[in-house]
Amino acid sequence: QQHRGIGDEPIRLGEPLARAAMAGTVGGFYLWKIICPIDLMPIYAQWSIEPPTLWHALPWAVLGMIGWVAWRRRSGWGRHLLLGMSWYLAFVVLFVGFWPISFFRFTWAMDHLAYVPMLGVIGVVVAGVNSILRASDHHGRLLSWLLWALVVTTLLVSTRAQAGLYRDEITFW
Image 1 (cartoon, rainbow, N blue to C red):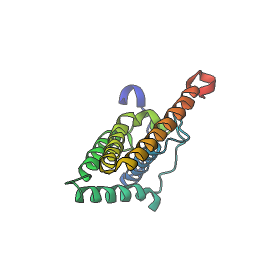
Image 2 (cartoon, one colour):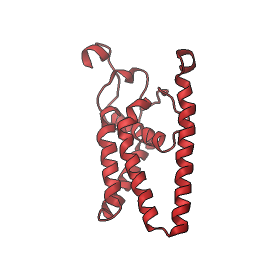
Image 3 (cartoon, helix red, strand yellow):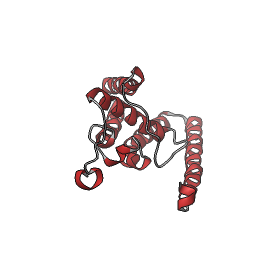
Image 4 (tube, helix red, strand yellow):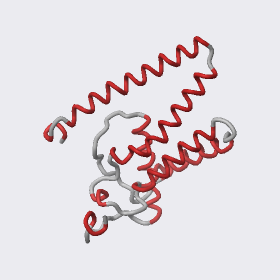
């Protein structure tokens, strides 16, 4: 990476506070795109991280609150959330801005980097749906299955539309 991808060109990530701001916003950005996959692009425009603002701290505050609630509920559903969060964080931390990566020259976020961290979020969603289905009566289970089928169908249709963008280079860019 250092010798071939980055070379001698400096990649400006800023001071430690700016790096923490970038890590929070990039991690939150990836999580948002996993939860709400609308307007997906292979490469996103680079946003400003210098100087860090209070908005840059928002993802860290949300992460802290979710982690605190999950830890308090770890004897039940919280353990699933903690596992999913841990998976997501363990794999997203590699490319959110703590270390220089060659693509940081032109963007902070690229969708393909979220594929492995996405598995933690999917696991949390599946565990949550399973808990709801087991706790529901017959009508609740039927409604849950219909809602689940609607979500999966919507994702299938949007995946098909997204795949059309990769038909050729002209369509892609």
